[in-house]
Amino acid sequence: MKEKQKIFTVTSVIFGLLLLLLVCVSENTQAVNMSIHEKKQDILIIDAGHGGEDGGAIAADGTLEKDINLNIALQVKSMATLFGYKTIMIRTTDSDLADHSLSTIRKRKVSDINARMNILKENPSAIYVGIHQNYYEGANVRGFQVFYSENSDISKNIAYSIQEYTNRVLQPQSARKVQSAGDSIYLLKHAPIPAVMVECGFLSNQEELKLLKTADFGCKIAMTIIGGISKFFTDARIT
Image 1 (cartoon, rainbow, N blue to C red):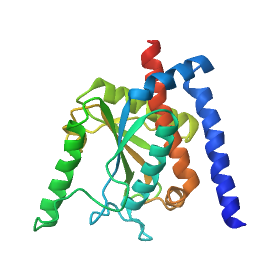
Image 2: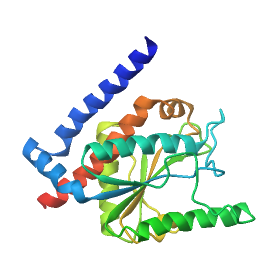
Image 3: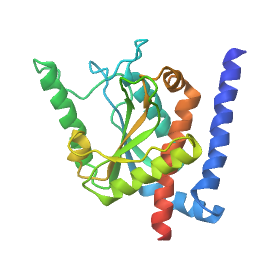
Image 4: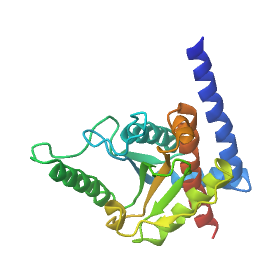
């Protein structure tokens, strides 16, 4: 019974957010349908940050960032496919892209980043979307934050669209704005294609951590990411 109830809840969330997305992306249904049709050749590279021996940030209860990243990334893939995007997943399991014949963690980490970068280089018509979680010493800090690569104006516009959509639909109390990755995020600094990184929430905030660990909230995040990207394409076509 509990399993059936869980399935019903997740399905209801997806259906409700789907309807909300169709309303918010455009002022009319015809524009939305045209936008979905035109996006069928677009490719999203979805990167669940960290993985394998690299756990990323660690919450107070031992939750690893890499696991939440993967759960959300898989839902982003599902939503992207639903809306006509082609997707390339950097990882679909608890793994990394490192050369494990290398002798040190640092060398393996560098090889992992280089392997991810090569995927970006091999797909010049794609958009890169990194999925991560934030961590801060102040336990009250929370919220969704998007970073963008300075290598492309498209990156900034996509980031703005995702952040605005999330602030409006999922976190209306949030006043967060996008930030340039600058030199601090290697993949974004050197990305040869439009690239953004989404910090979905703060593992250091206990209330937000509980949400991030649920399938329902992961589904909502996935919908707002794809909703923001879809809105970017719709606005770009109209203008």
